[in-house]
Amino acid sequence: MKVDPNQFDYVMYVDASGDDGFAFERGATICYAAAAFLVKKEDIAHNLEILKQIKAIVGCNEKDEVKYSRIRRHRRGAEALGLLRDAKGQLSCQIVFKKEVDQAKYQGNKHLSILCHLMALRSLDKYCLEENSKILIAIDRMKNTEEVPLADVFDHIKSQRKRHYTEQIVFRDSKDANFLLIQIADLLCGAIREHFEQYETHEDMLYFKTLCPLCVKAALAHKRIQPLCKNGKRRALSILASKSLKYILPLFPIHTESELREYLTMEPVKMVYRHVYMTCERKK
Image (cartoon, rainbow, N blue to C red):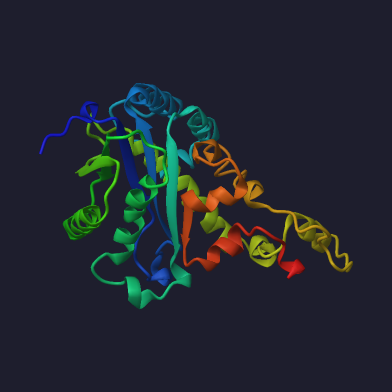
């Protein structure tokens, strides 16, 4: 089925990062994430130019696909990813910490993949979209066992809810000339997943992950002053200023730290408090 993105007011580009397996001893990723990048029709050309510049920096042919896994290893990777701050669009993401969920709930029928991709539909309700807007949701090609049930669930939810906009879902290869910005979604999603996977595996971060910045400094200095944290400072934005995420923070449509949880959702929910807690754990 041919679809012309120019016939829509917005295009939401969706891609995933990681795998949906639970065989961690055989190299399965700790996290699985899906990111959705909502772009106005008039901003598509601008973002294509950003993608072109990113490819030029890492020596990728303009017509070839560029992946986050390639850029992160490139000696000029940080420079290339830095261009993402100039992209025009709005970002939302769902990330699943696979070691923390009930594996039986997600194994079989690609439940994990479907869960993460459906966040694209859920996040649309949070945006301030013009009345009668037409939105195209372009998802990177998946296996047939994923695409069919995802489309079915999408249609079912759409039929149950009245909206002031209309949407259509398509699955397209990120090399498709009309949908190259799926590659931008890949870069954004890869950066998010890498941040949280590093946070979960780095020993120092594991030890301090329930502490606020003031508590961490005091603990590192071996101070035993109680309470270590005097005012329970929030750290949501400081976490997102990490090496992996600092370039893309402006793309989240947030104005306050608390709004971050509207567009960066986590499964299970308890991981929100581990990674983006709003008050110091020592104050409880």
